[in-house]
Length: 120
Image (cartoon, rainbow, N blue to C red; front, side, top):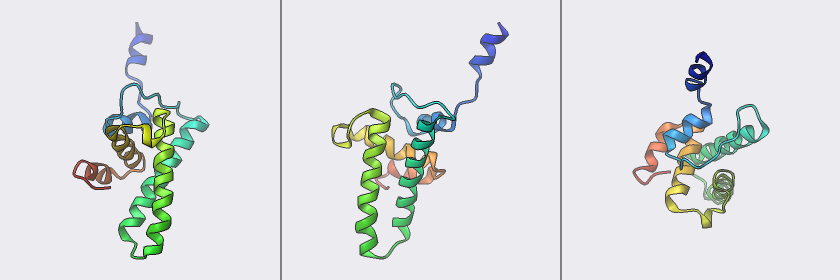
């Protein structure tokens, strides 16, 4: 009985919490904490969110051209890692959820919330 209770209240990983907050589909399988896949997904999320943050303060058109390519590539990578499909094959709701997920993982919940109003 104690064993059953202890597994019932296990702490969620940061990715699991972000997935819940971002409203990812329930069938998305996240990697286990401490694995290379977990770290790779976390890095992709951080890189994506960092580029968005830099774009918000940049004034150079050249920067936007370069960062836009990088941001789109990272967004495409997120779709593959989360859904197993290219971003073109992924629904709008799911691509938006992937972007929210990246911002929650990166510790930028305000960016994720802006997506609900047509932002980042």
